[in-house]
Amino acid sequence: MERVLFITGMGCEKCEAKVKAALEAVPGVSKAVVSRVAGEAVVTYDGTATDDQLVAAVSALEHYPVSGILDGNLRPESMERITTPALAEAFIDAQVDLLRKQIGDGSVLLALSGGVDSSVVAALLIKAVGKQLTAIHVNHGLMRKGESQQVIDVFEKQLGANLIYVDATDRFLDKLAGVAEPESKRKIIGAEFIKVFDEEAAKLSGIGFLGQGTIYPDILESKDGIKAHHNVGGLPDEVKLELVEPLKLLFKDEVRTVGAALGLPDSMVNRQPFPGPGLGVRCVGAITRDRLEAVRESDAILREEFAKAGLDKKVWQYFTVVPDFKATGIKDGKRAFEWICIIRAINTRDAMSASIERLDWDFLEKVADRITHEVPGITRCVYDVTKKPTATIEYE
Image (cartoon, rainbow, N blue to C red; front, side):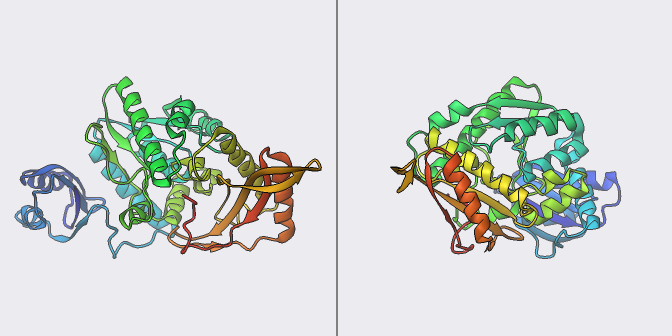
């Protein structure tokens, strides 16, 4: 369990050390990460310590008043929305200090998908601990077209990160074979990710931390039972790694602002959100390799046409979905019974609600024509006009 104490009056390293020692002396507390820059102490405990005990331990020092205490997964109401470079820089300074104190001289392993969240976490960790970070990119066979190669090009060749590439396509798809229930698919993908990282960690010496790109909407949706997120809920007991989640109280728009302040390229900062389970949640129903390929190819066509039309900078997220459902069509003058491709394009600020982009019909017709003629197995396209709520952004 985790609690955050907001503390004022810590003006030097000795002050931090006093607060840290006082908190770690409380029965049940296993670790306290104290930062005068952030003005807070993150306390990990087993549930036996009470809020009163934690506050009393700090208050006994006399010079360090506690202004508040919260669940470590709850965003403070007083937390200002990060909308400017100055606010982003303040957040970065605080997180870099907290990360250095949490990780110390240890080594951290990061799940690097190449999406916005994990990319910003990687940049923060590089700024905080440099080569103590080892980033692992797992190709689970559910990536978008050309995405794994792009991750290698950007992070290994351009940013000089310690990057390990793991091709686990067959491993993931074999585990997912025949599984149609959405939450079961997500849990299988999440569990297999943990296993892969555990195996990779075992090959490295001194790894004690696992970085994750958890953001606040992930926590809220998991808490409310809307859907499970692979990066929420902690790690299984058998995985002996401590979590590092510097973005977990930020909304998506704030993550982008922080990424820009960190100097990440625009193509990365403003990259479309991509779910942890990848195309697995867009291949609705039990995943088959041929239908998964249809999702990948149709998605590539949609992204290409959005870029050509200048819509890639206007629309927050756009993608295709190919459910396990077929409809009759005509191809080469013959009856064809093939899949339906659903096109979805939405706009949102924080991913908690979403509106539909009103796309031009000529544009949609062009996209549908390309998909039905260029992607094997698809005979029909439809456009989803359902906002969030009632629909979630993704289909599973």
